[in-house]
Length: 304
Image 1 (cartoon, one colour):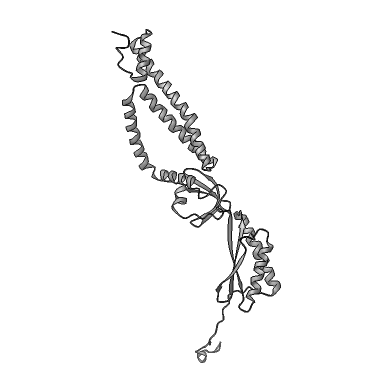
Image 2 (cartoon, rainbow, N blue to C red; image 1 turned 135 degrees about the vertical axis):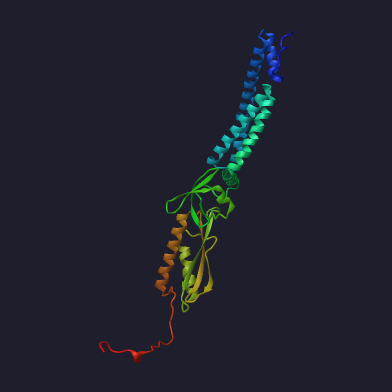
């Protein structure tokens, strides 16, 4: 029997290695086993190193080019590394001459994936939503967002949940699907924010004078932009007041900037209104009609 003729296991790379070892004098069974081990380790090492040194950096550069934040790149980088390891193991088993093992592994993996998919629908839904948040970037860490009656500052974004600190210093852990299924308001996404501030004046007050005061105080506030310029429009004739709505812009806003600037602006306008004798009326009601009391003749004095 020629060397290597009795090898029943090992084809391709593992078979070639086994025949080489058999030619060196190793028993066929030992040569076949050693050939499979060497083929497995060699192919795994080559594929894994190529993947780690080529594929992972390539994916990382793609994420950087899309301006993906560092906290989002880390889990994606780990996921790519796991995929590279799986591909290396698959290629290594194939090189070692175990195609049946790979088919069995694929069948088991498919069945396990199906079972896990049914059992973890909500987790997978939030995971996919997290990917959409990373790619679409409706908000970033540090942004002030509002959704479903809630609001706060984004502190962390993961593939499953987003953590938001409310303005009462509470921490909300929000499933990502809630932030992708509904409408999210991000007031600071565009770098500028327009504020609409209504002022009510009396019907007897001078509308033009009140308008000039509102615009003048907007120009005096250094946090309010000159371009776009502040504007004032008469928007409502109410039951007890005329409503003038001021539209002003602030730059690079945050929640604290928004609240502080609005408060300072309203206080300045109120002070000027008081100085100029312009009233800020409040609703009042006038009751009219007659009051009739009956049955007085039937009332007897006490003690009678």
